[in-house]
Amino acid sequence: MGIQGVVMAGSAHATLGTASRARSAPTRTTWPLAAVAAAFTLAQLLLVPPGMGLGWDETVYVSQVGHHAPAAFFSAPRARGVSLLVAPVAAWSSSTALLRLYLALLSGLALFWALRAWRGLFPVRVLALAGGLFGSLWVTLFYGPQAMPNLWVALGALAAVGCFLRARTGRTALWGLAGGAALMAWMRPVDAVWAVLPLVAAGLARRRWRALLALSAGLAAGAAEWVAEAYTSYGGLARRLSDGSAIQGGLGWHLAVVDQLRALGGRTLCRPCTGALPHPLLTLWWFALPSLAALAVTVALRARRPAATLLPLGCAATAAFPYLFLIGYAAPRFLLPAYALLAVPLADALARLLSARRAPVRALVCAGLAAHLAAQLAVAVRTTDNTVRAREAWARTVAVLHGHGVRPPCLLTGHEAIPVAYAAGCASAATTGPNANATPDAITRTARRMPVAALVPAGAAPPGYARGWTSTAVGTVRLYYVVPGTGS
Image (cartoon, rainbow, N blue to C red):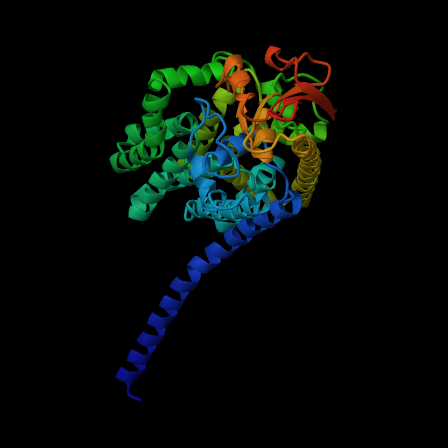
């Protein structure tokens, strides 16, 4: 072979080597994130029994597309995103296990997508650690396989911020930004607005018009149905927002920080939020967040990449603000978007500590992470066990209802009527409260043509329309029921 042949062969070998490295680079930056997402899905399936019955809010969302029972009342603050998300399963199957498997797999894929949106902004080890930090929180694991909107707002926000920071790299990032914004608005439009306020401010300050256009298009696409429904079913957008505020106790200045702290021990809804604070081991990570955020800012400033850290921190703050200061009750899931947005900057700070030359620092961080993981898993197990027991009690109530002849078509009212009614295959109704959709006279008329039951907490008086009905005790509730044509 001559000199020219050697040169050509060498050039070809170099070209093939470059191509091979180019092909392997995405793999090296992808598989750790895929492994984290797969572990997140597996942990959900291990910790949350697939057969765990549907909760109150889940029932509302699933019943809109399922055929197991009539749709539950859909109040003003809710959006139809979750209903559409579960429709591929719930529209043809009433299997809760199948629905939870579907949501666990889908949430794992969404976590992978959201983390991958940050590629190039941080090393892959930081992104993998961020996924581990967020995915190992008990509230993330608990709600991953459930038909609830907050986790999807969180993953949409994480993807949107990452794509906003990469918006100048090409159309893929712009599409990702629009997709993340649409996912947030699809699930909870008002939460989406709070989460993107810093993106809007940064876009205007830096004249990032293409990014702002993609963000606006995504928000508009996701919120379009909710806005249209406001005018067709709720008396207009202003009325829907007003009704939503009233249902949540009236939005205004409410210091709910301590309420959220109380909920960290495994209380899925803290309303009213009273009682002792959880064990310090369960809340220590919460108090560490400000210090880790400050360290993340310091690391970013030294590395001369402040935007990639300051922007998600700002979005986390605005996403958390209404749930810490404007609502008079607490639920841990409300802060999932903030936790997701904090995950990447905090993982960057922890990665810096783990790479420190001082062995005691590394050992302390590893010990802290291990203790945090153990505490989160313990809360996840306890919360799941308590939830399973509560929903098994609903199933026993359903069995008693069916045993006394309250079978579809039927109507349930009263205490926890929405989830029990759906499990029983009945419609649900309320005469007072945020889910009011009937009058006592209407329920009385219904009782003349189909079985109707009222669920009343033990020791409480029944509603006026049910005082002459047959009653029986089931656990912590008493059933008042009437079955036309049977004398009961």
